[in-house]
Length: 60
Ligand SMILES: [Zn+2]
Image (cartoon, rainbow, N blue to C red):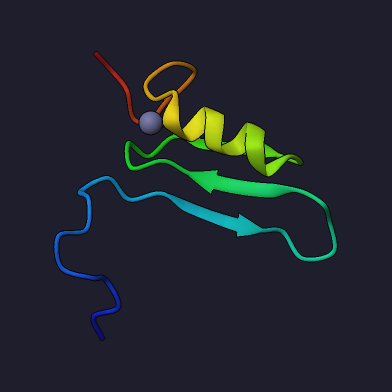
C-alpha cells in the first residue's frame, strides 16, 4: 500500500475532521497536535512550524 507519489516531501501533515463537529484535528510532522474550526487557520498553524508547536515529548 503505497499511496504517496515519488518525491513527496518528508514533512507529513495529517488533518482529520472530527465526526459530528466542525472541528479539525491536525497533527504536524513534529508530533504537535492542534485543533481548529477553520481550515485556513489549521494550515497557517501547520505551515508556521515550529511556531506554536509543542510536541508532547519535548524534554530538552
Ligand atoms: Zn510542527
